[in-house]
Length: 113
Figure 1 (cartoon, rainbow, N blue to C red):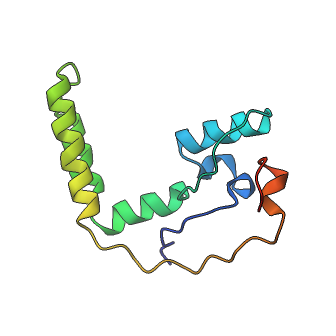
Figure 2 (cartoon, one colour):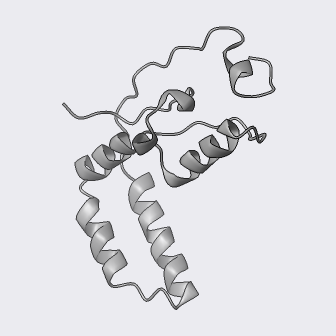
């Protein structure tokens, strides 16, 4: 069974290996008491499943292996190419996300939930 990409609002409940780099760093900052904006993340396993099912893994890998990272314009062009490949694919229907109970976010952020 292939996991579907699913936005996850309760990021602190995710295991560290399921967070991408940016979300993991935001979680570390939040856990240390720093104020961070509310955010939503897609679990790494869902992103990888999407890339596999959309048949993009090898294409992106090949593009990156041929990229000259010392040329900013080439990096920009490759980034736009990858973004276009991803956004042109149809996403699977996401699983419903339930709304957290009142006050849930107060545990993590100084906001009204």
